[in-house]
Amino acid sequence: MKPDVLGVPCLTGEDRSMTNLICAQGYHSFFQSTSVVWSRDAFNVIAEWPKCSCGWARSNIRENCRLLGYLFKPFRDRLSLGFRINSVIIASTLVVPYYFIAHSFTCF
Image 1 (cartoon, one colour):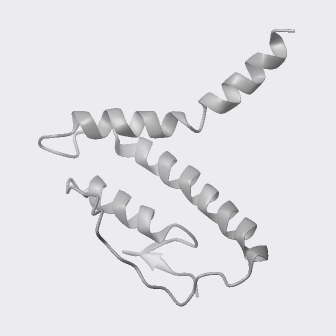
Image 2 (spheres, one colour):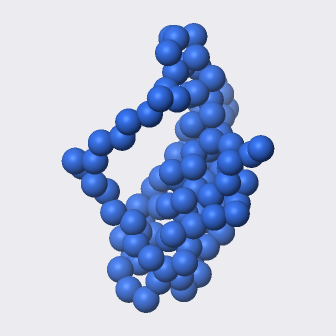
């Protein structure tokens, strides 16, 4: 059985997926610096780290693409400019590194 967040299938990055679903409905999400999370499902062996890291990277790409789907639509009454600027900066991390890599090869 695949886990889902509010009916949307999600294999990795449930926290980010839930945040996207909340923001897409016009609500706000906030950073809580004093929060504590306990998990029994954390990896126990260092060999599991690359698999988890790849899952987080795939989740990041998927959720950034979902975010761009509603980012410039009127989904919120107010306080959306800062959210949009921050989201564009985050989404640019999907493109900018590859641009610089490709550009470095064309300079020679």
